[in-house]
Length: 474
Image (cartoon, rainbow, N blue to C red; front, side, top):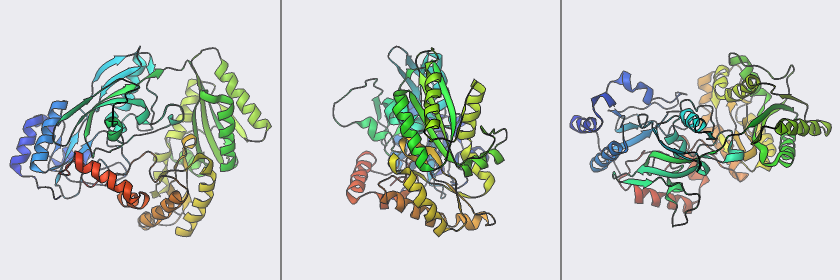
């Protein structure tokens, strides 16, 4: 359906809902909402609205639906597939949830917390910590990412192995539908078998079915002890074997298993100020593992040492650096979490957020490297990711000596080839970043006609006028 243009009179009606101070009309005030951090997507809008309550969100959507105006919801603007950026023609308005930033309730005994969509992930973590609990979802962008966007994209992060994605940590939602009605679904139940799971329908829908205004989150006990190590390995096959070894010996205590190659390791050391190498020599592959325990009895440290010793004796690992202090643990994590930023120093980067079955990650690495060399000789794969759930950020940096513009012109060719390989291996073209506007065409190739028909039917039922995040996902 064709959406309407925005008249000055209609803009004034939107402004009236949130107040002039919370309606951004000047280009210089809007700039931070119209460009994503990699500059791949730049949009335009007549107004950025910053509602301060669910009621104001409902009024905005009711008016937009009646007037057929597209609404692009935005949380922290940290998305990597352009889902939060309006179109370049200025026909859509931006609705930022940043002012919806309150903790509504914390029930430490029940292990639940209700927070509004505009709270940053770091603030949610801090609120849980203050209550003596842990909200375990963690991302490199957690200081900027807001919980509404985290849930709307079903974000994963570094602790999925132990605690799951946002979906597994979200018990209930409050959301505004396209016509302005509010769904009050902030339940705290772990079991609720009463028909279609509307919560799961909205989680991961990228703002195309409703705008999330609050979430009921699951909290877990804080670990009493953590033990962290960076491990040096020879090949992706030995990474897999070491993961199986750690999984067998540590069991549920294994909360993190990240991995990366020498290429991105080198970029981080070269381009990240303050980055420290855990080792004195370079190795082909690395893993960051973390064990946790609810007991402060030193057992988790002993278990990690035993795990590493046995791995070394069996030839699984080349070396290991165990964090001996909180600062050393922070240094290990700073190295890992700086990989996305570090790539900028090496020029253009074509990024793929994919997943394959864990046991096939080494095979994917081998086949993808051969494929990349055929597509663009000299291009440098710099993969890293969350090995325990098969999520590989298969990023490829430009060849030395090639211009950034010439390299990025090969984006579609490169991503199509990688995504075809992923499909052939039974994987997913988007493990945690979502579809947005970047992967709409790829989604058409990766989903069956039946799946696409089901998705379109759901979209039509909940947003018949197509005002919610138009041009995204579908």
